[in-house]
Length: 133
Image 1 (cartoon, one colour):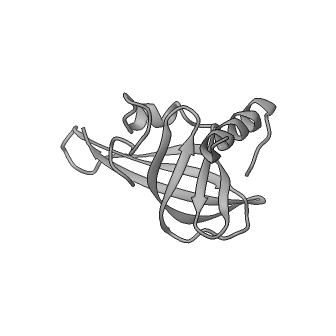
Image 2 (image 1 turned 30 degrees about the vertical axis):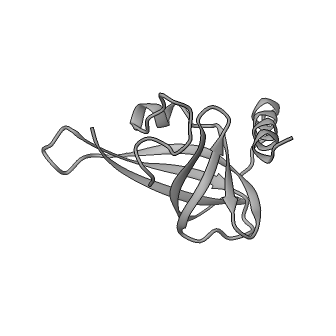
């Protein structure tokens, strides 16, 4: 069994069991055709499990905990800005960098994550988007 398949199964099992484990291009690398990042598509992923591929620690579970919207300071209505907020395990600490992430429905993609503090026992990670529509 391929590692990717195993990760997808494990991630889906966590979501179905209700277990809470606490940047890239507009189109994700080898994600499912038809998925495009945007405020609406990201909002539909809130509460779902992702797997971050850390070079030393291996696969780490993340939950997309929320989406914060940024009012566009520009008068251009074609600009869409928002931040994805992920919760993950407190250890190991994940430094700001671009990581490969997997999601059961959209596949593997690259995303720049930066540490965002803590929320209870979970580490918080952010990914900021500024998209030209």
